[in-house]
Each structure stands twice: as structure tokens, then as C-alpha cells.
Image 1 (cartoon, rainbow, N blue to C red):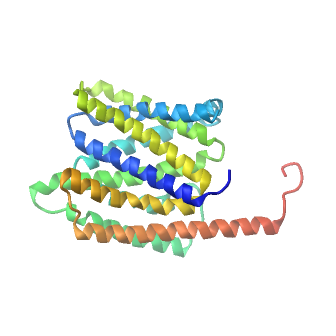
Image 2: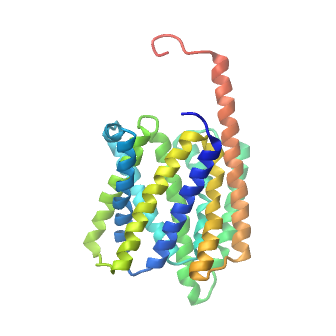
Image 3: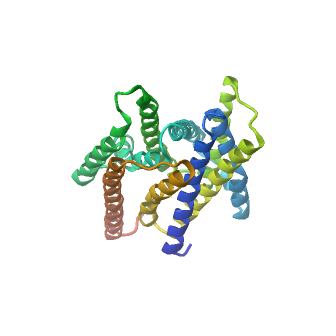
Length: 310
């Protein structure tokens, strides 16, 4: 696949917009529809555009094949939990605040990669992690007041932090799964298993939504599927270090949608904290890019592998 960085960036921007609009729809639904029902519809309906993409690319057979079904299952459970916290957070705090707190995901990912993947994290990235966590504290501080009215906001901020952490866990799982699994199987089992896990919440009671709410639910699934396709395609045309920084455009989208749809204006301290976390995240991305170049140079210096394994 030829490299087309501009196309990869545009696809990433489109994916980020799709996911942000999805979040706005979830905020619109509020507590009228149980979170488990929203998660199920979002995951199940997303299968439609995903299966169409896999069929068009003739990858349906590759999507079903797997060498690590248990790994896909644990990832599905993680993603359902992440969506639960995501949707619960969006229902309690402004869109921009939730988007800002989610920027902590790359920071959590560095820590998890060091612990579970055995990656060597040197002083530069640990410094970025520390700065990033300072930014997180700044972002969530407005949500932890002493008035009773702040309780809902505090719970929402904690949910958003849990969402960012579980996203980092999911990223770590994907990095492990990608050693044996194809992109097609990662996309396919993500939606299938997320749907099945979310279906369990039917036991605690779902509702029959109004026609408008049902249309909104279906839209979340379509947007979720389109967003996943756009992200997958973006990495076909550009490197991760090229497109990843543009995921921070979600803050801009969230501020605009929050203001025009819900009359939300983010507090300056939240924007300051977001700026700190974004700076730390961009440094982590840049450092990962530099390490990737250094590893490639080392492999070329060592020469091609020899013997049976080569």
C-alpha cells in the first residue's frame, strides 16, 4: 500500500469526528436508555459497515481465523467496560471535559506497556508520564468540589478516568494480539464479542425507545463502525506517529458540539490541563517514533537473518 500521509491524516480526522458525534448522541440520549442497551446497539449495528468493508476487501475468511480467541474475548470485555464508563461519563460531565480526560490514555499506555509488555521505558518517557498525570489532576480538579451538587460531576470525572485507563488496557491488549492476529480479525471480534458481552445487560432491564431515540441508537452503531473503518484505513496510508497526534482534534470537535448542542463552555483550567496532557502525549508519540527509527537502523546494521528461521 503506497504511503499517502495527507490521506491518512484526513481519515484520522474523520474517525475522530465520527466518535465525537457518537458521544454527543449518547449525551443527548441521557438516562432515557440504559447504558448496557446503548453499548449493545452501538457494537451490534457497527457490524454492518464493518462486514461490508471486510467483504469488499475479501477479508471475511481472514477475519474469522484466530489463534487467540481468549485474547479477543478479554479485549471484548475490556472494551465493553470502557464503553460503559465512557457513556456514563458523557452523561454527567461536558463533552469537552470527557474528551480532555481521555487524552490521558497514551500516558496510561506507557505505564502498562512497561509492566505487561516488558518494554524498556527510559527517563524521557517517564518524565512525560509524570507531566501528563499532573495535567490530569489539573483537568479533574474542577469536578471535585464540596457542594452536594458537585457529586454527579465528581462521579462523571472518575468514570472518564476509568474510561481512559481501560482504553489504555485495550491498546496494550491489541499490541499483544497483533503479534498473531490480522487486522481483519481484530476488527471483527471486537464488535462481535462486545455485542455478546453487552447483551448480558438485558437481564437488568432494557427499554423500548421512542422512534427518535431508536434512530439515535442506530446512528451510534453506524458512526462507531465508520469510525473504526476510518482509523483502520488511516494506518494503511500513514504511520501511527503521523496520524496519532490528529486524534487530539476531538477536543475541538467536543468544544464546538458541546457549545452549540448543549450550551457547554469548558472551564479555562480544564483547557490548561488538556494542553499539559496533550503536550506530554505528543512527546510520547514523538519518542515512540524515534525509538522505532532507531530499532529499524539496528536491524539493518545487523543484516538479514540467516539459518532456518530466516
